Length: 166
Image (cartoon, rainbow, N blue to C red; front, side, top):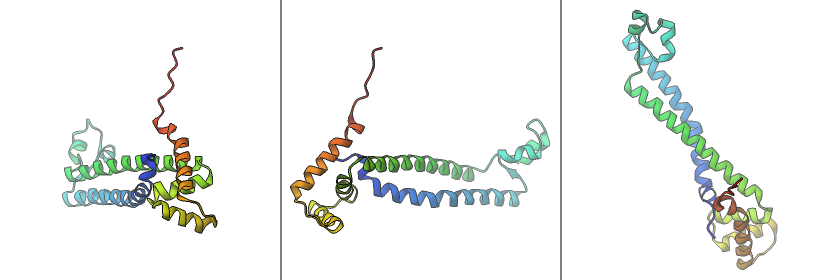
């Protein structure tokens, strides 16, 4: 029985989340610095946030002093927004995987983590469980526990919603 995608991708999602947690603030800082540098070189204040400091939209001197952000800086801000959306989606997938694993009894959770998340072979799953618990399981027993775990969690992913005719 195939595990849900959130479990298969759990390790990759955790790695991506860690990268995004580092990269987004770095890019935000870079974008702000680029905005300041362009303003310093050109003598023009860029960005909507500075418009009210320079004058209102109807004030011709304010309109001249504050211009739209240059295209390359604007593109960087759009890329940052896309990364923030990806960060939020990744966090949801991670939380879903963690909730699925928390739903299972400990023995089944360990087997699913080792098989679906870590991608170990059945022999390696058996060895790892023996190291952790001191109990020796046959491949058949491990497969049975894994199948039982999948039967518990798959309805959360593949069941159709109940529709009421009331």
